[in-house]
Image (tube, rainbow, N blue to C red):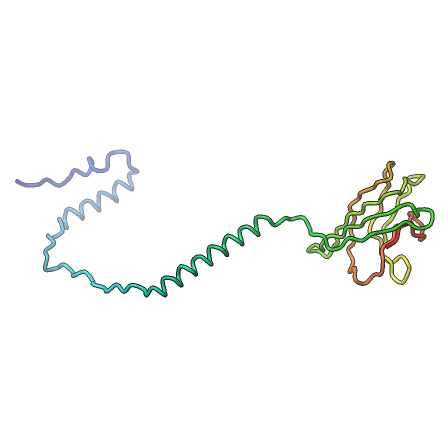
Length: 194
């Protein structure tokens, strides 16, 4: 019985790009000329490589198990810490302020947050007992040095109920200053001081 070579058109069909069909047809013809591969005989077989397997001593297996457990705990801890980390700044310091002069009944709490990547100290001032000023004037928070106003940290208007909570900012090296004060805009007389 004579085997007929496979029909090229039956193998590839007729929906090919003409260039691709020509390329495949040339390969098909080369395979027909080359013929089938010779039968594989046992004399050409390459013997399988043999290897000796050595079991680890019990002590090594225990050390490996301990190392794997330690790595698992470390990965868990890192995942926990990164998952609970907040983008909100932490509190660096809380400064209490007391009223003086005409505002001796007033008080404030200045929460200074951790310095940001640009060197700014975000803050939150909660003042009690300051009333709105006439003519739209504002209060100002200042850093002092040697008893004098040194650097401004923001202006704010007081709420009618006397409780004002306002975010502010200090873009300075805080360790270069002595205290904090709140004054009326355009004045250097402290109303609140640390």
